[in-house]
Image 1: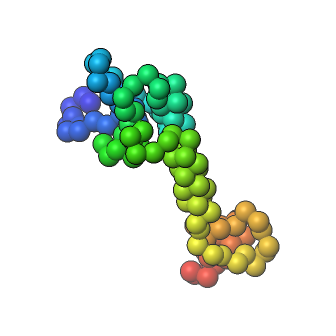
Image 2 (image 1 turned 135 degrees about the vertical axis):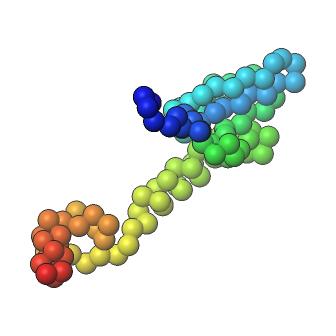
Amino acid sequence: MAGGLDPTEEVDGSITVRLLDDSAESKQIRCSSYPDAIDVVKDHQHSVTVAKIVDRDDDVVFTSAEMDIEDWEVEWEHAKRRLSVDVEAHDCPYDSIACFADDRCVQCEMDDVQNRY
């Protein structure tokens, strides 16, 4: 940044797969998404002692010592699906199927503006 302050912390936002092996050196593989990380674990799970998925906050969210990756993937998909449907209830007076409490249709937004004035 020219003439400004440099950031004090940088985060690349990636997910890390740690492959731990008793007989060889451990590896860390950066992934851009959970599906990528799941694929890496599936590719390497039988050739290492333990495979771990570490999230963006440096928390271990999966370890092959405790759970099978296929089972964890199913649970992750279910959690992702639950998060995508947990929205506040909103009854659109115009019956718009794309109108939500946090993302209203144009007619509801116009009503909100008119009600404010």
